[in-house]
Amino acid sequence: MIASLQRLFLDLMTSDETSEEEVPTLELATAALLFEVARADYHLDKRELTMLRNLLRRHFDLGGEALDELIHLAQQEAEAAVDHYQFVSLVSTHYSYAQRCELVRMMWSLALADNEPHPLEEHRIRRLADLLHVSHADFIRAKLLVQGHLDP
Image (cartoon, rainbow, N blue to C red):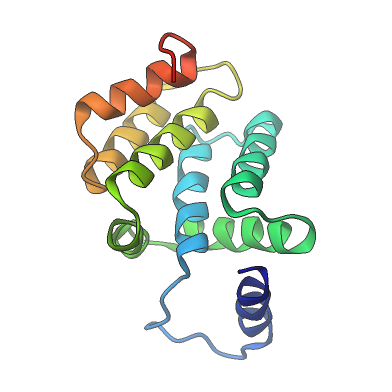
């Protein structure tokens, strides 16, 4: 998987023109959705960026330059995207329901990393959870798990 990510990054960096039909990888789509949550309150806190790195490192077993490049590309994709459709549809197609619930839990971990819950972050997570077809009960369960109010 690391080799395919590195090929993707190399292709993206050496490409002179980008096609509008290019589809992001599952890793990039996941990272972009997480980055959307991190920037939802219009403030990227150092603790949130650290949490993003840790989440992506564990989730995709990445490190070093591959992880740095994934985060950089995720930031670019999130900032350039008009909507979340391309990311959400890719994740919805390839992730099981349990994996989508885990992604929502990761979103909550990211939003609460700075110990400052923000209504815009909650709104973004709720919207993404709905688009990912994660039930409201599982949305709340993920939040309570991250807050430590439920046992895993």
